[in-house]
Image 1 (tube, rainbow, N blue to C red):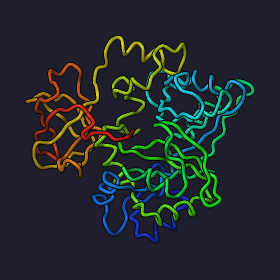
Image 2 (tube, rainbow, N blue to C red):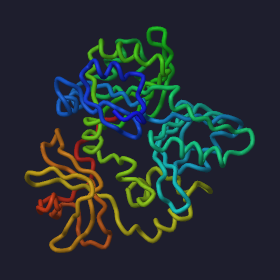
Image 3 (cartoon, rainbow, N blue to C red):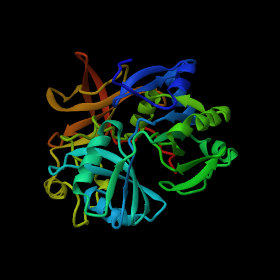
Length: 363
């Protein structure tokens, strides 16, 4: 392990479980565990319940009079659509409409918003918000003050309920709770397409909560399964489907933009792109035969180069290769059409489809 990589508060637990580690966003995180690997971990989440240590995710807090209004004037989605106790997926864009990061905003009140950005982008999101904050509003990075454990799968509510945790709150809402004397926040959020929860807990308290979850029968899952699960859902990953060069309009994430808001970062550029129509858009590809696509592979319609994959993997649920790709809007192709992906020099047939690749069960 590189000395520069950070470790989660559960690192020793992962080592004891025989985890294989990988660098992700500057952190040394479990990719998969001994005794099953990605395929069994993926199946556990689709069929029962799995727990992911996602403590590498960033955390930041915005407080002060008008904090929610300030955040709303910066990030794309409209916080006015939700009420305290609810969460919202949103985007931090630059002035050109490029995506600095995608994140979840937890609304506590008019004067308090908690943010969970991606690991590698936390410092930049905090920097941008702090630089723009008006007097009386503070933006504080709390990256290593909180751990996040994602319990995902159709049995997640049953298992958390047996531990005495709240599970009945609506999708994209959160509630405070106590487990074994440990205070935590139970959020009805996740990144797998399954009914699930994310537990935000103090950094030093994370091992006790992890142990309780494992003892309750939740299978530990690594970032490998997290990626196959999110790709099956067509969920974007920052750095692949969302970047400074890939706008939310191109990534089909315009639903996370409050188009009628008077102000948010990148508003003018995004409104102009929406009106003109994006030059490319995110589409799904499902292989018709054998092969596993990856990111940055060329996509062809006949002899014409029409785009490039952004993510690709083997779908454990569908038992085929799947990919997300940016396809030129000028290309005369529609969902259901056959195209080719250049997989390491070999043209491999795939069908254009509209994600998700599997039926979501988040609610």
